Structures are given as structure tokens and as C-alpha cells.
Image 1: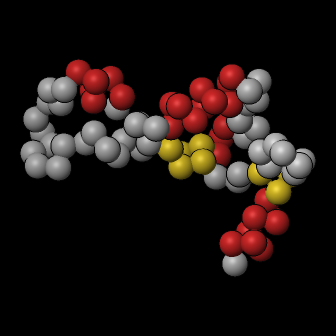
Image 2 (image 1 turned 60 degrees about the horizontal axis):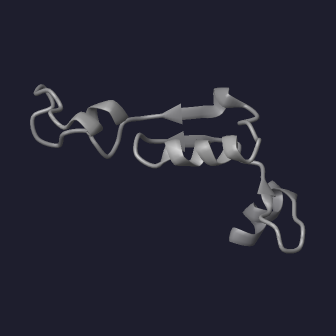
Length: 79
């Protein structure tokens, strides 16, 4: 199944280089997504269809009382 999905999304493959895949849905969260998009920027690439990107706070959301403010400054900034 993996190979079938991979093959259906493979745009370009060149020996010794990273393959380029077409990603038809971007599910992003507040912790590591910024690094992924920075990698695209540094490679001179853009998200082809940004309207297909869905972002949701995930890792820094309090799991106890969500009515309380987020006290950690980095967590708050990421969200």
C-alpha cells in the first residue's frame, strides 16, 4: 500500500537526490511545522496550494483546565 501511495504522488526522482512528492493535504501543528516550511523556503520552494493547509494547535494546548491562560511564553508564541 505504501508503494502504491508513494508512486501516485511521486513528481520527480533523481539518483542521489531527495524525491519530490505531491502532497495534497497539509496537516500542521504548532511545534515542528515551522521547521518544515522553513526547509521549503531555504530550498526555494513554495507550497503549491496553501488553501489545502489545515493548522491546529496540538502539543502546547493545556490538557487540564483550558480556561486558564497558557503561562509558558514559548508555548503561547507557538500557538
